[in-house]
Image 1 (cartoon, protein in one colour):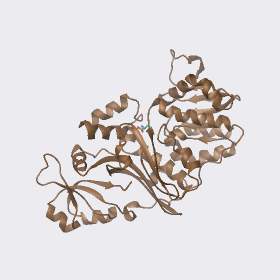
Image 2 (tube, helix red, strand yellow):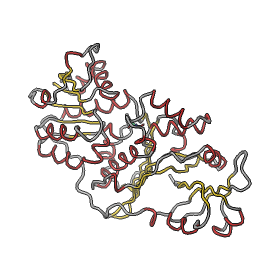
Image 3 (cartoon, helix red, strand yellow):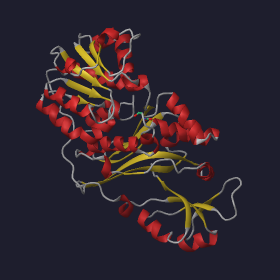
Length: 405
Ligand code: HSE
């Protein structure tokens, strides 16, 4: 069966590698159909690549090739990937993607285009890189109401935080290392400021509850304000700071969804997730807690998920899988700061006596070389709005959510 790849960057070239090296195995797994790469779309030139004769800069070469049945979109970004994907799906070609930005923003329209074209739009690689999470959520957990999800969804930031926690490495050096390893987005701001994790939260929430959640509905905070001082205080409380995406079922018409740094206590499975690894903890009302763990970024782990979707499409080439979600609503994601209660880590220039006066008994934290006018503590459970009201007039240095996952 002829297939095409759009975008020959880290993931796209990984997809071609996996198809090259696993040809026979893939043919067995599709039920006898080898995946034969007919075109690779990229605007750049790759004269020394062993597939140089397959390259095209013209999208129509793929769209108009009737023999191409499956296309892997690994271009990233919304445009022109959206236009290309929509046209392919409407033409009846299956599309698989690792493009979380596109799925988070345009997933509903593309799922509808797939329905129109009687074909499949699959995106296992869009969340958690190589971790199987989309299919388990869509199929294996069908007998559950999902109660909540908490995930380390960005490899780059987890890598940076791990280097800060374990090696006292500067933020900049750790970011450079992540970029050199091919983990970071083209513009690493999307990693650092939490936008990449936000897109993955949108996809997980949409899948879990059946209504499209858009990135602008998910309050998002990155890790750029996390300091080595915060890391040290949290360590004294037997915890670590992780960038978490969190989703909570409120009722059938509303959920809470947010991305932020969070204190995770050692003992939680999420606390031991290091380097570029991701983990997604899913809490179902029948199954209890499940933890999906693996490499969340990188060439071959992500390609592993893309190719699995290609195999699935090859098996369902004349059948549409019932998969996806419906329309969302503007007020569907509630303001978590007003409603969700949790403890908070606070670092501030204030005396312990003042803190006790405001919060009652709290857990004070310590660090080496702690200045005499600085305290750090963990509050009791309250909403963020309540916390901010109590801290009114206090000079805070950092505030971090504490998770119960
Ligand atoms: N930049 C992303 C990350 C790639 O670091 O997790 C995988 O989505």
